[in-house]
Amino acid sequence: MAKKSLQLGRAVEWPHTPEDAQLDRVPNPQKGTDYLVRFTVPEFTSLCPVTGQPDFAHLMIDYAPGAWLLESKSLKLYIASFRNHGAFHEDCTVMIGKRIAREIKPKFLRIGGYWYPRGGIPIDVFWQTGRVPKGLWVPEQGVAPYRGRG
Image (cartoon, rainbow, N blue to C red; front, side, top):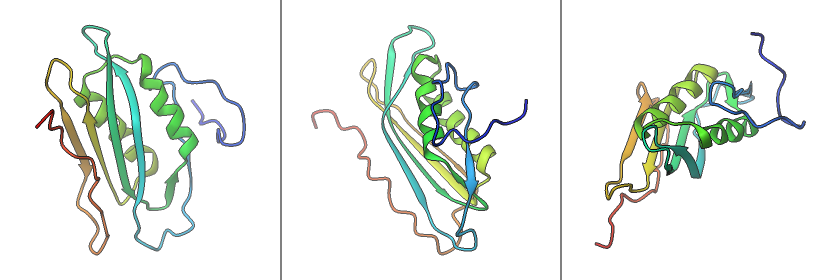
């Protein structure tokens, strides 16, 4: 299937599944410079594949672009496609990281999935491609580990 034109600047339908979602990339005008891009997704939702109950997470996506940038409207649509998708926390987090890495081929990418507790147990999931490029400033993600009432 040929890739469609950019979704930016036009009305598009919300994708029904992550597989249906189109991730767009645009040329990086600073491709000769190492820098970090951070997307914060504080209201990610998906469904438990067993119970169908909603799961909630705070996602942090950091990447050092190569030739391509990830277009943010397409990311928003992709993220929204998980609202009716049943998958475990680990699968959602890693699936998102791998898909972005495949589409834009960054120099480095990491994703932190900070999942809210279900059944009394929070699950945090972390995935990255390779090593951080030498000299690249990668700040902490700033999401505190779950502490309950302690």
